[in-house]
Length: 359
Image (cartoon, rainbow, N blue to C red; front, top):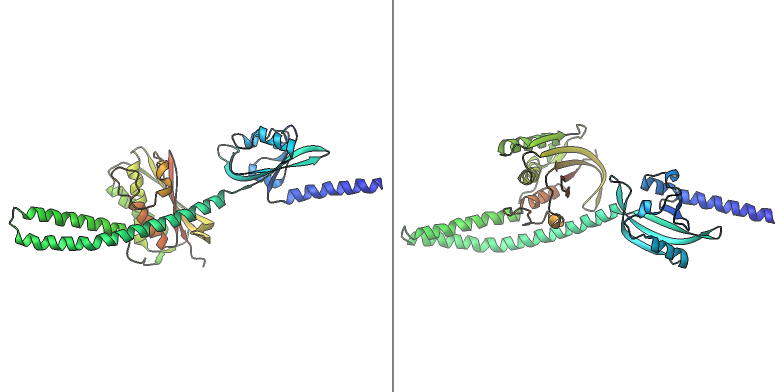
């Protein structure tokens, strides 16, 4: 009977360890002195640290500067009441940080209480949710602006026509007033047309994306007054993409012009292309896409406008119209692609994803 109990206990421990090792969820076990005594393979992979490096280390090696504190863990050991934490940023090193959702519970091993921490990375889910929300907000803002633009454009035409008729009845001295009305009406009409955005469907043909980017580079080098260093990091294996060459050029040119206006002559702009796989574009899973990155090492985009960067009339410059990036977003959307941005001081990267023909 004693032999059977021992056998069952050994089998139980063996199964527990095997099951923990097979879990996709990362698991850490912390003893009563708050030292790490076990990490399953999923935790090793997520933390980029082996069990040998983690064993015997304080929990603060992983959870420093988070809401998983010594006080909370000791309380859990004492009461056994589990807790959860979401949006916990774990910084394993300067180059590796991620956001996790964590569940902490208590369990006894050899009649000694231990803490089990189960955690999973949620960066991708957060990013997808944020992108979907921003896309919805951008569409709502764009439709609102377009509705207002149409309402403004109609009376502007009548105002300009009335000024032209009145101009014929006035003396030359008075005609300067009607000329001013006509000039300002034309200026507002031009602004409204830009707010309405591109009004033609893309003319889709097969193009080499690098030829498109080289044409933009030539335009920038000819027109820019700043002596900006332009670098290229191309992936020659990218096949031709189905796109409207003019519209993609315009989208990239708007982004590069914004970058040039924001940076100094000593800074650099890099055009980079890569193949991207298994990307989510506007809620759809895309197996392969051409990724175009426009990177500069300037001061970065102000944090307060990063979430609304692609909305019409949003600009980080006092003299900016806030239409360039909104138009770029519309042009890329017409190609069923995605335009996004990541920015911090010293590194701003605009990423264009264009789906590739699966054939």
